[in-house]
Image: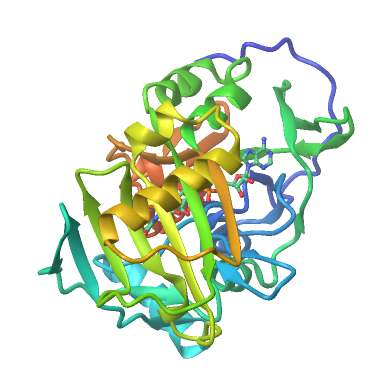
Length: 345
Ligand SMILES: Cc1cc2nc3c(=O)[nH]c(=O)nc-3n(C[C@H](O)[C@H](O)[C@H](O)COP(=O)(O)OP(=O)(O)OC[C@H]3O[C@@H](n4cnc5c(N)ncnc54)[C@H](O)[C@@H]3O)c2cc1C
């Protein structure tokens, strides 16, 4: 593959210097890759457009003191490498098992879930996971990278304000596939094409505080035959304020995609009404009701590649969609990207 951009001058690199590595995206995959690369390869610089780290592992706080894990709800562990990461986080008190009662909710019938995976959550919020992964890493927040130019011997990054963000020997793009495709479309067209093949569905999340506890015998439920796909009593997770009755509802991918352009207020109302219907509880005036639109929540058909790499262009792409659409996949994808970049140097 050849670079599609013309050769340009860039700042010279002293011989034998540690490679300068840019990582765009400080979600789980980017942070894991950054930690591994910083320990093993060279100097990393991380950029994220958000106000905080963690990406889709995220917690929304309100002025009234409520908190909602409105992205990833919990994570399960299958792979031995991920288990080691989780054990370290657990030892530092950053994650804990969630013993919530999980059910299946279908046409007014509540059946306890037969799945008995151990479910972990961040403590005291899901966002603790990203903060732990980000410790000791140099991260520039509030910086959306708009252009990644492949020059003769470097990647040059520019933010949306036209400000230069530096020249780098390697570029690691750690974000949802459609966003990676957009960033790399001009400069790494083959990788961008591979990213374009992965469709990621949106997800509407509703965040609700009820004044009174709901008389429901579950703390999380997979919902069938409904616009909703998942509902959870956020306040049942360890370390959350237990005096509150806080719930997070997720709409399913089809309903979310069909309503993606609608105003958050009307979506929140519709999701709350559907929750009352499927859970068959008496209605209450919520003390807090809001909805958040995740434009690229999860890939229905993730790749099984670990990561995408073009060693000639010195660019890699990682994210959950490369390895299974979950937190565990994001961690494994970040590790794969770091290891493949180091092997290709
Ligand atoms: C509603 C929802 C529910 C979920 N539920 C679960 C669950 O229960 N269990 C589970 O295991 N997983 C769940 N997931 C999936 C899980 O959240 C993801 O697998 C994981 O967080 C993905 O991490 P990532 O690093 O691949 O991507 P992300 O977390 O999306 O990180 C990408 C980062 O890139 C940044 N970024 C993007 N473009 C740019 C740019 N141009 N410049 C700078 N920064 C940029 C973003 O701000 C973001 O921080 C859920 C996800 C959602 C949305």
